[in-house]
Image 1 (cartoon, rainbow, N blue to C red):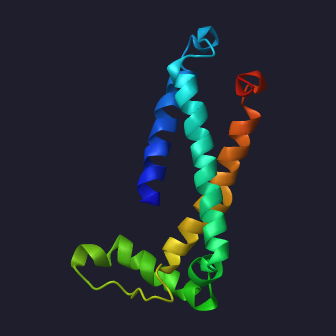
Image 2 (cartoon, rainbow, N blue to C red):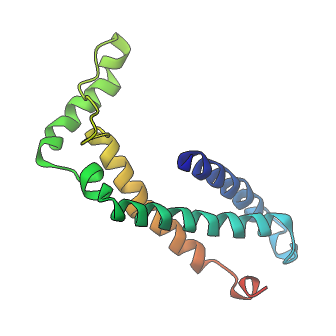
Length: 137
């Protein structure tokens, strides 16, 4: 469910973000639907990221599922080879999910980059580019 909510929020933010970047943006009033949807979708995304972080810290999911361990480093090359070549040959995935490790090494790396680097940057730049007077209304 969380993934689908985030997918919807990202799509809304992309569509409204593109609409806000076209010419004529300064003429959009503070009650324009694109501004309203972008503002609240952004705040919903912030809430979603905070929820993920709190939930992951509370159940120790960050260290258990997302931490890259020494064995993962050599597993990254096997997994990359699988995704680039072996999957098209019908070969078996070298990673076997378990309750202790749900994600393969590349999934850990991608999730860590998205939630630890890209999401905070997007949130921070969104706040920097915000019109403070718009948030007071």
